[in-house]
Length: 248
Image 1 (spheres, rainbow, N blue to C red):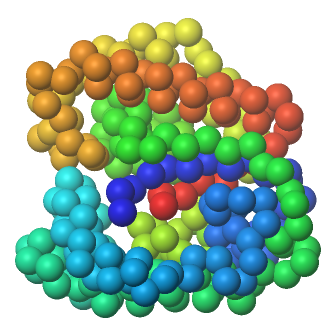
Image 2 (image 1 turned 90 degrees about the vertical axis):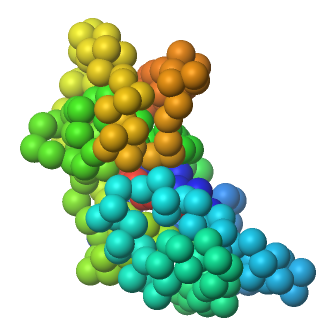
Image 3 (image 1 turned 45 degrees about the vertical axis):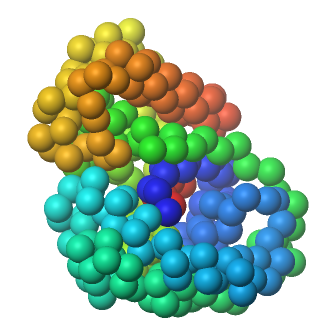
């Protein structure tokens, strides 16, 4: 139940279809090229497992988030982080998972579930650290570099989105081209590396949490994720594609 940032390249025409029906965005963030309506159905054993450990896992993830984001998710779950840590909310987590599964099944069709290959990138838990080293802030701002990870136009009118971590967002073909050029500037990588500071990042509650003893390895981890993100934008730009992204 950790928060991972995923980016998916789409053709311009496909982006237009998804904008017209934002529920289709969810199909981009599943693990396979096809998605049968029963996707995500849990066995009784897995349901019991979610009830037993899901609240504590969720509490651990929430405790590492920016307070504003944490409050939004607590409201969504109807439980405080401390209540989740005490084991409450397992049934609520199961309910939200089932709602997401049913919503996806309702919007699948032969057209949307056909075998379409998408180039994608997952930053896993490194997303917030990459965002910080690009702009020095915990949230997106007005600069272009502050938009690369957490920016983009929101899809639909559901503030929580299908994942519960916010709606999917998108960058147009033109925006991807501009971001690709900006991220590829030679000085961006060196500036990002200098901006890495575990003390400041801890003070700002940059996910997923930082320790001075692991600063060297964490810097390598974040910079590797930055390079993959940079190359992903450059690749999408070279192919004239848009990008859809979401925290899942």
